Image (cartoon, rainbow, N blue to C red; front, side):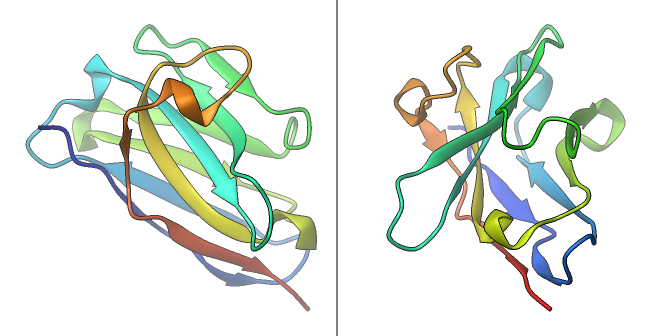
Length: 122
């Protein structure tokens, strides 16, 4: 009965930062692979990053060096730190469980949060 919820989105200027959170009250996220995806209007859902339950992390080439995925076990939260944001990062961001694979495909994930909006604009 896993349920996911994202938070932390907002409006930022290019070059700015945000930290997105993925939480699951009532469940232990450490048991799950967690992926982050994004979808902009008119575009397909795009894999951004994922972390396996064992701590393996993957990033899409478009965000390497700018985004960082992490877990805080004490807070039962998975984060996606977004740094040096670009206008093309504008999208609704989703966290999902639970198959972190190298191709970062949405079809590998069964449970999704509601999404949080990230807008990068000057």
